[in-house]
Length: 269
Image (cartoon, rainbow, N blue to C red; front, side, top):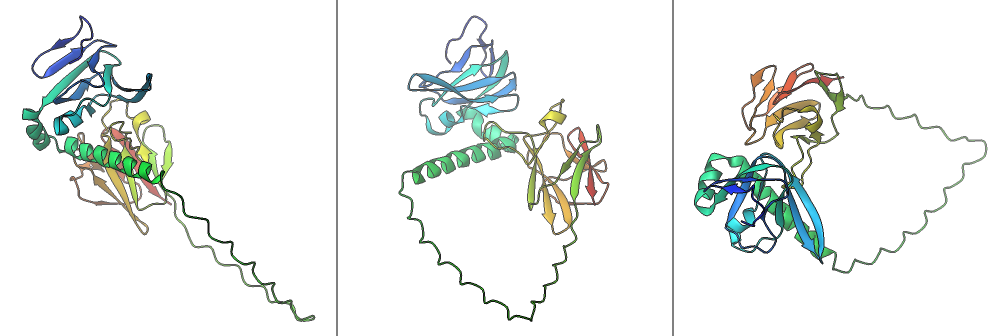
């Protein structure tokens, strides 16, 4: 662990740091990862002598996992953005951690998948782009109507009946119109994987009771279902009844859906 100052203390598994101290620095050898129990951690990378902050992590986030997997030097530095308490995970604890907290394993896989997608996207930027297709020929001029025989106007198409689906906060009455998509994610932004949910509850969840990937809403024609994600800590409830993880529950108009401590009313109109 990189030296930071007199405020640093470390036991076998618990690490405490003061603001500005480093957990580790870019290029250090490492064989452990860390989970934030309290405080903020800044992930910093130096490129061409320029320091860049890649992410700011908070309670429940993890970092440094690549060293557990491949024994390579640290790709970036980790620095305390406030007073912090961390849980250090070495290789001997790694398997046990995955068994006890499946959310960590799922988020780790998502993070690695995102890195792979970025590598693939970067590789395509170096390929020559295909030449633009030749322009399509101009459409033929319409045949003029015969004088004295006016064209019959086509009747306007009838507009299909549409319904608006909303989630209305019980406290405050603010509403969110559900987007026109089959799968809608609910939770908080995840700086570890870089994902942002369709419905971001950060501003409404002062108690931090909502997990990063808390639940999903599924649309099937004019029906909506709610489904809790694996590893959700504080539960998802429909009319005060706990939803089982991975099981879709059909929503009806005026059902109260609670994500952790954030209560919302499903409205269909």
